[in-house]
Length: 411
Picture 1 (cartoon, rainbow, N blue to C red):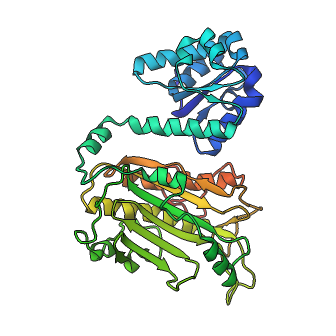
Picture 2: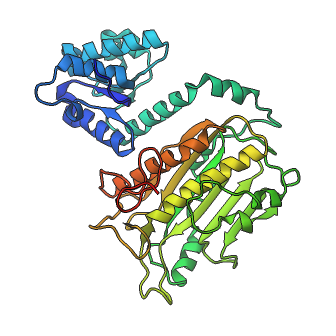
Picture 3: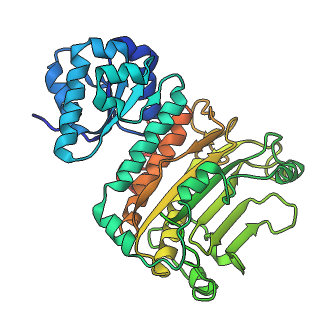
Protein backbone atom coordinates (compact mmCIF):
# COMPACT_ATOMS: atom_id res chain seq x y z
CA UNK A 1 0.00 0.00 0.00
CA UNK A 2 1.57 3.36 -0.98
CA UNK A 3 2.29 5.74 1.86
CA UNK A 4 0.34 8.98 2.09
CA UNK A 5 1.75 12.24 3.41
CA UNK A 6 1.07 12.60 7.18
CA UNK A 7 -2.17 14.45 7.97
CA UNK A 8 -3.23 16.28 11.10
CA UNK A 9 -6.78 14.93 10.98
CA UNK A 10 -9.26 12.78 9.06
CA UNK A 11 -12.84 14.09 8.65
CA UNK A 12 -15.28 11.23 9.25
CA UNK A 13 -18.91 12.04 8.36
CA UNK A 14 -22.12 10.98 6.70
CA UNK A 15 -22.60 12.39 3.20
CA UNK A 16 -25.82 14.16 4.33
CA UNK A 17 -23.74 16.24 6.77
CA UNK A 18 -21.11 17.24 4.22
CA UNK A 19 -22.50 20.66 3.23
CA UNK A 20 -23.59 21.80 6.69
CA UNK A 21 -20.65 20.60 8.78
CA UNK A 22 -17.91 18.44 7.23
CA UNK A 23 -16.85 20.68 4.32
CA UNK A 24 -16.85 23.93 6.38
CA UNK A 25 -14.77 22.19 9.06
CA UNK A 26 -12.29 20.89 6.49
CA UNK A 27 -11.98 24.29 4.79
CA UNK A 28 -11.52 26.13 8.09
CA UNK A 29 -8.83 23.70 9.28
CA UNK A 30 -7.01 23.94 5.93
CA UNK A 31 -7.18 27.73 6.13
CA UNK A 32 -5.52 27.42 9.53
CA UNK A 33 -2.62 25.53 7.83
CA UNK A 34 -3.59 22.05 9.06
CA UNK A 35 -3.23 19.03 6.77
CA UNK A 36 -6.72 17.51 6.44
CA UNK A 37 -7.86 14.23 4.89
CA UNK A 38 -11.31 14.98 3.43
CA UNK A 39 -12.86 12.78 0.74
CA UNK A 40 -13.45 15.65 -1.69
CA UNK A 41 -9.75 16.54 -1.53
CA UNK A 42 -8.45 12.99 -1.84
CA UNK A 43 -10.66 10.76 -3.99
CA UNK A 44 -10.58 10.77 -7.80
CA UNK A 45 -12.47 8.76 -10.39
CA UNK A 46 -11.34 5.12 -10.43
CA UNK A 47 -9.85 5.07 -6.92
CA UNK A 48 -10.40 2.10 -4.65
CA UNK A 49 -12.58 3.68 -1.98
CA UNK A 50 -11.66 1.29 0.81
CA UNK A 51 -7.94 1.44 0.05
CA UNK A 52 -7.83 5.24 -0.09
CA UNK A 53 -9.77 5.56 3.16
CA UNK A 54 -7.53 2.98 4.86
CA UNK A 55 -4.52 4.98 3.73
CA UNK A 56 -6.08 8.22 5.00
CA UNK A 57 -6.89 6.72 8.41
CA UNK A 58 -3.37 5.33 8.74
CA UNK A 59 -1.76 8.66 7.76
CA UNK A 60 -3.91 10.87 10.03
CA UNK A 61 -2.96 11.73 13.58
CA UNK A 62 -6.50 12.53 14.72
CA UNK A 63 -10.04 11.79 13.58
CA UNK A 64 -12.69 14.53 13.59
CA UNK A 65 -15.97 12.58 13.69
CA UNK A 66 -19.23 14.40 12.84
CA UNK A 67 -21.79 12.49 14.93
CA UNK A 68 -25.42 12.83 13.82
CA UNK A 69 -28.53 10.71 13.31
CA UNK A 70 -27.48 10.22 9.65
CA UNK A 71 -24.05 9.06 10.84
CA UNK A 72 -25.51 6.20 12.87
CA UNK A 73 -27.83 5.20 10.03
CA UNK A 74 -24.93 4.63 7.62
CA UNK A 75 -22.53 1.71 7.60
CA UNK A 76 -19.55 3.33 5.90
CA UNK A 77 -18.84 6.20 8.33
CA UNK A 78 -19.19 3.78 11.25
CA UNK A 79 -16.57 1.57 9.59
CA UNK A 80 -14.25 4.58 9.51
CA UNK A 81 -15.01 5.18 13.19
CA UNK A 82 -14.16 1.56 13.95
CA UNK A 83 -10.83 2.11 12.20
CA UNK A 84 -10.13 5.09 14.45
CA UNK A 85 -11.04 3.08 17.56
CA UNK A 86 -8.66 0.33 16.42
CA UNK A 87 -5.89 2.88 15.91
CA UNK A 88 -6.48 4.21 19.44
CA UNK A 89 -6.23 0.74 20.93
CA UNK A 90 -2.94 0.03 19.16
CA UNK A 91 -1.36 3.40 19.95
CA UNK A 92 -2.79 3.84 23.45
CA UNK A 93 -3.86 7.44 22.77
CA UNK A 94 -7.27 9.04 22.33
CA UNK A 95 -7.38 10.30 18.76
CA UNK A 96 -11.11 10.80 18.15
CA UNK A 97 -12.40 14.40 18.30
CA UNK A 98 -16.24 14.26 18.28
CA UNK A 99 -18.45 16.99 16.79
CA UNK A 100 -22.13 16.67 17.79
CA UNK A 101 -24.50 17.66 14.98
CA UNK A 102 -28.18 18.00 15.96
CA UNK A 103 -27.99 15.32 18.66
CA UNK A 104 -27.80 15.37 22.46
CA UNK A 105 -25.99 13.28 25.06
CA UNK A 106 -28.96 10.94 25.66
CA UNK A 107 -29.22 10.07 21.97
CA UNK A 108 -25.46 9.53 21.69
CA UNK A 109 -25.45 7.33 24.80
CA UNK A 110 -28.16 5.16 23.25
CA UNK A 111 -26.05 4.66 20.10
CA UNK A 112 -22.49 4.63 21.45
CA UNK A 113 -21.81 4.70 25.21
CA UNK A 114 -18.08 4.83 24.47
CA UNK A 115 -18.45 8.11 22.53
CA UNK A 116 -20.93 9.59 25.01
CA UNK A 117 -18.16 9.40 27.61
CA UNK A 118 -16.02 11.82 25.58
CA UNK A 119 -16.16 15.59 25.50
CA UNK A 120 -17.53 16.77 22.15
CA UNK A 121 -18.15 20.15 20.55
CA UNK A 122 -21.53 21.20 19.09
CA UNK A 123 -21.76 22.04 15.40
CA UNK A 124 -24.10 25.03 15.84
CA UNK A 125 -21.09 27.35 16.15
CA UNK A 126 -18.53 26.16 13.59
CA UNK A 127 -15.99 28.82 14.55
CA UNK A 128 -16.00 27.57 18.13
CA UNK A 129 -15.87 23.97 16.96
CA UNK A 130 -12.81 24.70 14.79
CA UNK A 131 -11.11 26.57 17.63
CA UNK A 132 -11.65 23.70 20.08
CA UNK A 133 -10.49 21.11 17.55
CA UNK A 134 -7.29 23.10 17.00
CA UNK A 135 -6.77 23.41 20.76
CA UNK A 136 -7.22 19.65 21.17
CA UNK A 137 -4.78 18.87 18.35
CA UNK A 138 -2.13 21.26 19.65
CA UNK A 139 -2.60 20.10 23.25
CA UNK A 140 -2.22 16.44 22.35
CA UNK A 141 0.74 17.18 20.09
CA UNK A 142 2.39 18.85 23.08
CA UNK A 143 1.77 15.77 25.23
CA UNK A 144 3.33 13.46 22.68
CA UNK A 145 7.03 14.01 23.34
CA UNK A 146 7.95 11.86 26.35
CA UNK A 147 11.56 13.03 26.31
CA UNK A 148 10.41 16.66 26.27
CA UNK A 149 8.17 16.07 29.28
CA UNK A 150 11.00 14.41 31.21
CA UNK A 151 13.47 17.23 30.50
CA UNK A 152 10.86 19.89 31.31
CA UNK A 153 10.14 18.16 34.62
CA UNK A 154 13.85 18.11 35.44
CA UNK A 155 14.33 21.82 34.69
CA UNK A 156 14.87 23.69 37.98
CA UNK A 157 12.06 26.09 38.84
CA UNK A 158 12.96 28.93 41.21
CA UNK A 159 9.27 29.58 41.99
CA UNK A 160 5.67 28.64 41.20
CA UNK A 161 4.89 28.03 37.53
CA UNK A 162 3.04 30.76 35.65
CA UNK A 163 0.77 30.61 32.56
CA UNK A 164 2.00 29.59 29.11
CA UNK A 165 2.96 32.37 26.62
CA UNK A 166 0.33 31.10 24.17
CA UNK A 167 -2.38 31.49 26.83
CA UNK A 168 -1.32 35.09 27.46
CA UNK A 169 -1.61 35.82 23.74
CA UNK A 170 -5.03 34.19 23.54
CA UNK A 171 -6.49 36.20 26.41
CA UNK A 172 -4.58 39.39 25.53
CA UNK A 173 -2.91 39.92 28.92
CA UNK A 174 0.60 41.28 29.48
CA UNK A 175 1.63 41.22 25.82
CA UNK A 176 1.11 44.36 23.77
CA UNK A 177 -0.57 43.01 20.60
CA UNK A 178 -1.29 46.50 19.23
CA UNK A 179 -1.61 50.22 19.95
CA UNK A 180 -3.63 51.81 22.73
CA UNK A 181 -6.40 54.29 21.83
CA UNK A 182 -4.08 57.19 22.71
CA UNK A 183 -1.31 55.75 20.54
CA UNK A 184 -3.71 55.20 17.64
CA UNK A 185 -4.66 58.89 17.85
CA UNK A 186 -0.98 59.86 17.94
CA UNK A 187 -0.35 57.62 14.91
CA UNK A 188 -3.09 59.39 12.97
CA UNK A 189 -1.79 62.83 14.03
CA UNK A 190 1.69 61.81 12.82
CA UNK A 191 0.36 61.21 9.30
CA UNK A 192 -0.92 57.66 9.63
CA UNK A 193 -4.08 56.15 8.16
CA UNK A 194 -7.31 56.87 10.08
CA UNK A 195 -7.96 53.12 10.41
CA UNK A 196 -4.80 52.77 12.47
CA UNK A 197 -1.90 50.46 11.67
CA UNK A 198 -1.87 46.72 11.85
CA UNK A 199 0.47 45.25 14.42
CA UNK A 200 2.84 42.29 14.32
CA UNK A 201 3.69 40.54 17.61
CA UNK A 202 6.25 37.75 18.00
CA UNK A 203 5.96 36.12 21.43
CA UNK A 204 8.36 33.47 22.81
CA UNK A 205 8.89 31.96 26.23
CA UNK A 206 9.31 28.75 28.18
CA UNK A 207 6.22 26.55 28.04
CA UNK A 208 5.66 27.44 31.69
CA UNK A 209 6.91 30.87 32.68
CA UNK A 210 9.23 30.84 35.72
CA UNK A 211 9.84 33.68 38.16
CA UNK A 212 13.34 35.19 38.00
CA UNK A 213 14.37 33.06 35.02
CA UNK A 214 16.00 36.08 33.31
CA UNK A 215 17.39 38.12 36.20
CA UNK A 216 18.90 41.43 34.97
CA UNK A 217 21.52 41.19 37.74
CA UNK A 218 22.59 37.63 36.92
CA UNK A 219 22.21 38.10 33.15
CA UNK A 220 23.41 41.65 32.42
CA UNK A 221 22.27 43.76 29.51
CA UNK A 222 25.58 43.51 27.63
CA UNK A 223 25.16 39.75 27.23
CA UNK A 224 21.89 40.27 25.36
CA UNK A 225 23.31 43.08 23.24
CA UNK A 226 26.24 40.89 22.16
CA UNK A 227 24.11 37.99 20.87
CA UNK A 228 24.58 37.40 17.14
CA UNK A 229 22.12 35.36 15.07
CA UNK A 230 24.12 33.08 12.77
CA UNK A 231 21.35 32.38 10.24
CA UNK A 232 20.05 35.95 10.18
CA UNK A 233 17.53 36.95 7.48
CA UNK A 234 16.85 40.57 8.50
CA UNK A 235 19.25 43.04 6.96
CA UNK A 236 19.21 45.63 9.78
CA UNK A 237 20.14 45.32 13.45
CA UNK A 238 17.67 43.84 15.88
CA UNK A 239 16.41 45.85 18.83
CA UNK A 240 18.46 44.14 21.52
CA UNK A 241 21.14 46.79 20.95
CA UNK A 242 18.71 49.47 22.21
CA UNK A 243 17.42 47.62 25.28
CA UNK A 244 17.16 49.24 28.69
CA UNK A 245 16.63 47.64 32.08
CA UNK A 246 13.96 48.13 34.73
CA UNK A 247 12.47 46.23 37.69
CA UNK A 248 10.52 43.89 35.36
CA UNK A 249 13.35 43.01 32.98
CA UNK A 250 14.42 44.63 29.69
CA UNK A 251 12.53 46.89 27.29
CA UNK A 252 12.78 49.29 24.35
CA UNK A 253 10.26 51.55 22.60
CA UNK A 254 11.02 53.47 19.39
CA UNK A 255 10.41 56.33 18.90
CA UNK A 256 11.09 57.13 22.54
CA UNK A 257 9.00 60.33 22.76
CA UNK A 258 6.30 60.07 25.41
CA UNK A 259 2.86 59.86 23.83
CA UNK A 260 4.21 58.85 20.42
CA UNK A 261 2.86 55.71 18.81
CA UNK A 262 5.63 53.08 18.87
CA UNK A 263 6.88 51.85 15.52
CA UNK A 264 8.95 49.20 17.33
CA UNK A 265 8.58 47.58 20.72
CA UNK A 266 10.42 44.89 22.62
CA UNK A 267 9.98 43.46 26.12
CA UNK A 268 11.84 40.72 28.00
CA UNK A 269 10.26 39.91 31.34
CA UNK A 270 12.13 38.23 34.19
CA UNK A 271 9.84 35.17 34.02
CA UNK A 272 10.98 34.42 30.45
CA UNK A 273 8.14 35.95 28.43
CA UNK A 274 9.50 37.90 25.44
CA UNK A 275 7.73 39.97 22.82
CA UNK A 276 8.77 41.94 19.77
CA UNK A 277 6.18 44.17 18.09
CA UNK A 278 6.03 46.57 15.17
CA UNK A 279 3.33 48.53 13.37
CA UNK A 280 2.22 47.57 9.85
CA UNK A 281 1.38 50.66 7.82
CA UNK A 282 3.19 53.61 6.31
CA UNK A 283 2.57 57.26 7.19
CA UNK A 284 2.26 60.27 4.94
CA UNK A 285 5.30 62.53 5.00
CA UNK A 286 8.41 63.38 2.99
CA UNK A 287 8.38 60.05 1.13
CA UNK A 288 4.65 59.33 0.73
CA UNK A 289 1.86 61.78 -0.07
CA UNK A 290 -0.85 59.52 1.37
CA UNK A 291 -0.82 57.04 4.25
CA UNK A 292 -1.36 53.44 3.20
CA UNK A 293 -2.04 50.15 4.95
CA UNK A 294 0.52 47.78 3.44
CA UNK A 295 2.12 44.74 5.05
CA UNK A 296 5.70 44.34 3.72
CA UNK A 297 5.78 40.55 3.73
CA UNK A 298 9.50 40.10 3.04
CA UNK A 299 10.61 42.07 6.07
CA UNK A 300 7.78 40.60 8.20
CA UNK A 301 9.01 37.06 7.46
CA UNK A 302 12.59 38.11 8.23
CA UNK A 303 11.52 39.65 11.55
CA UNK A 304 9.54 36.57 12.59
CA UNK A 305 12.49 34.31 11.80
CA UNK A 306 15.19 36.39 13.48
CA UNK A 307 13.33 37.41 16.65
CA UNK A 308 12.23 33.82 17.27
CA UNK A 309 15.89 32.75 17.02
CA UNK A 310 17.03 35.64 19.21
CA UNK A 311 14.53 34.87 21.97
CA UNK A 312 15.31 31.14 21.89
CA UNK A 313 19.02 31.94 22.16
CA UNK A 314 18.35 34.15 25.20
CA UNK A 315 16.57 31.24 26.90
CA UNK A 316 19.54 28.98 26.16
CA UNK A 317 22.02 31.57 27.47
CA UNK A 318 20.25 31.73 30.87
CA UNK A 319 20.49 27.94 31.14
CA UNK A 320 16.89 26.99 30.37
CA UNK A 321 16.70 23.34 29.21
CA UNK A 322 13.00 22.51 28.90
CA UNK A 323 10.31 23.16 26.30
CA UNK A 324 9.66 26.56 24.76
CA UNK A 325 6.75 27.97 22.78
CA UNK A 326 6.47 30.69 20.15
CA UNK A 327 3.45 32.30 18.50
CA UNK A 328 2.90 35.16 16.03
CA UNK A 329 -0.17 37.40 15.87
CA UNK A 330 -1.29 39.99 13.33
CA UNK A 331 -3.77 42.46 14.83
CA UNK A 332 -5.97 45.19 13.33
CA UNK A 333 -5.01 44.06 9.82
CA UNK A 334 -8.39 44.27 8.10
CA UNK A 335 -8.18 46.78 5.21
CA UNK A 336 -4.45 46.01 4.83
CA UNK A 337 -3.01 44.74 1.57
CA UNK A 338 0.00 42.49 1.09
CA UNK A 339 3.14 43.75 -0.59
CA UNK A 340 6.63 42.43 -1.15
CA UNK A 341 7.68 45.72 0.46
CA UNK A 342 6.01 49.03 1.28
CA UNK A 343 6.61 50.19 -2.31
CA UNK A 344 6.11 46.96 -4.25
CA UNK A 345 2.81 45.12 -4.32
CA UNK A 346 1.83 41.61 -5.35
CA UNK A 347 -0.32 41.30 -8.51
CA UNK A 348 -4.02 41.45 -7.81
CA UNK A 349 -5.90 42.96 -4.92
CA UNK A 350 -4.46 41.03 -1.97
CA UNK A 351 -6.52 42.57 0.82
CA UNK A 352 -6.82 40.83 4.18
CA UNK A 353 -10.30 39.74 5.21
CA UNK A 354 -9.72 39.34 8.94
CA UNK A 355 -9.06 41.76 11.79
CA UNK A 356 -6.82 39.41 13.78
CA UNK A 357 -4.79 36.39 12.71
CA UNK A 358 -2.76 33.98 14.82
CA UNK A 359 -0.11 31.66 13.50
CA UNK A 360 0.19 28.07 14.64
CA UNK A 361 2.21 27.83 17.85
CA UNK A 362 5.71 26.39 17.69
CA UNK A 363 6.51 24.19 20.65
CA UNK A 364 9.32 21.80 21.52
CA UNK A 365 12.67 21.32 23.22
CA UNK A 366 14.76 24.45 23.38
CA UNK A 367 17.72 22.76 21.65
CA UNK A 368 15.58 21.44 18.77
CA UNK A 369 13.42 24.49 17.98
CA UNK A 370 15.99 26.66 16.14
CA UNK A 371 16.09 24.14 13.28
CA UNK A 372 12.30 24.40 12.96
CA UNK A 373 12.03 28.20 12.91
CA UNK A 374 12.38 28.51 9.12
CA UNK A 375 9.56 26.07 8.30
CA UNK A 376 7.42 27.55 11.10
CA UNK A 377 7.94 31.02 9.60
CA UNK A 378 6.75 29.60 6.27
CA UNK A 379 3.56 28.22 7.87
CA UNK A 380 2.91 31.53 9.63
CA UNK A 381 3.26 33.48 6.39
CA UNK A 382 1.11 30.92 4.55
CA UNK A 383 -1.73 31.72 6.96
CA UNK A 384 -1.36 35.41 6.16
CA UNK A 385 -1.67 34.72 2.43
CA UNK A 386 -4.61 32.35 2.95
CA UNK A 387 -6.37 35.18 4.79
CA UNK A 388 -5.96 37.24 1.60
CA UNK A 389 -7.48 34.44 -0.51
CA UNK A 390 -4.20 33.04 -1.90
CA UNK A 391 -4.29 29.25 -1.51
CA UNK A 392 -0.73 28.74 -2.79
CA UNK A 393 0.69 30.39 0.34
CA UNK A 394 3.80 32.53 0.77
CA UNK A 395 6.11 32.24 -2.27
CA UNK A 396 9.44 33.36 -0.77
CA UNK A 397 10.09 30.40 1.57
CA UNK A 398 9.96 26.69 0.68
CA UNK A 399 8.45 23.98 2.91
CA UNK A 400 11.85 23.18 4.43
CA UNK A 401 12.17 26.78 5.61
CA UNK A 402 14.68 28.01 3.01
CA UNK A 403 14.36 31.48 1.48
CA UNK A 404 13.82 31.66 -2.27
CA UNK A 405 14.60 34.29 -4.86
CA UNK A 406 12.13 35.51 -7.51
CA UNK A 407 12.88 32.49 -9.71
CA UNK A 408 12.32 30.01 -6.92
CA UNK A 409 16.00 29.28 -6.27
CA UNK A 410 17.30 28.97 -2.73
CA UNK A 411 19.22 31.96 -1.45
